[in-house]
Image 1 (cartoon, rainbow, N blue to C red):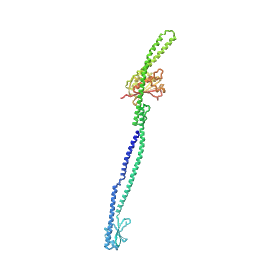
Image 2: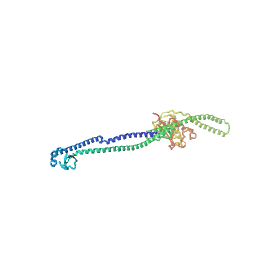
Image 3: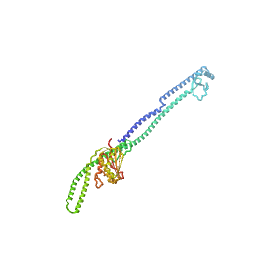
Image 4: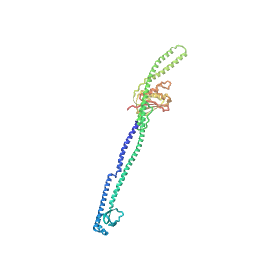
Length: 476
């Protein structure tokens, strides 16, 4: 399983757990929010009050029935039931104890006891009592507050039941809405997370590929990561490591190759030097022993002797260069202020100024590098001499700091170096000079590599040639 997939699955599981927990809590919150003011206990209390009010109404009905019987009994005891005025007097005499009694009906005839102007708006209770000779009925005006309270309680209970139903529907609606919105946001977040993880891990894939290239000794393809975070810093460190490994491999390979060439140079110098002296002596003896008087032959011998001796001198110079190359010592370095060292070298070679214009532009006065003075002096002198031999009229020597390296740059306006041979100019025995051995730049590069540095040709420079020496700064 890839790292990308693992991260995605972890985030997915975390979101699912968070979503389930949030749905649980949201459901409880919605239920609590909707239950404010609609507590089931409140409904029970209201129903108890309503039951009590119904008991009150039932008690009042029983009272009204008792009053109606009492009125009928009193009328019968007075024996005035046939006289309506007498009946009115009997009832009105005791009206104070007849609560809410408004009228009586005897055989369908209404006998109003108290005037009631609000009769059309009132609620009445009729109590009918058995009567032998006919019908007897009482009308009571029920107090409005009793009916209003009971009606209000009924409305409250009805509203409570309605809201309870609505609450249940709302709770389901809100929960579904939350789940829907959470699902939409969840899918959106997961899509964005997947895209983000892909973008985030893309540099990691590039790092992986870069490390694989380094492992396979491929150092010419840097890791391309543009981020400014830790991934970018890691990519930069890996690129520096790759460059250092490349330089180390090149240095090791070059030094091994130079070592083998040094052994070859030593043998060549030995093999060539041995016969040179006998050849010179033999030819001199031939010339000396000629006792003839042929002037043309004498002239030929003298000219041949000069040619042989000149060629022997040339071979001796080559042998000396081979010996120098073969005996080139290993650098013995010491901390030196690099700019001051360059200035000293140029002052001690002031004869260069008679042949070429030299400009110093040294910008690293405090840079300290570990230098073998003898070897690095020869490096500087050789580069200046090469510029002079390339017909340069001006040489510019500059310095600067880059990362952890001291850079010394040599620019000239000479004939330059042909593009076709730029890759082989540091190879031993390669030369474009008629009498050169091709060891100058090889010795120069070997000396720089012995300083754990590097030297290269600036291929972008077009006004002549430009060489750059990189030397590591000394540890402080």
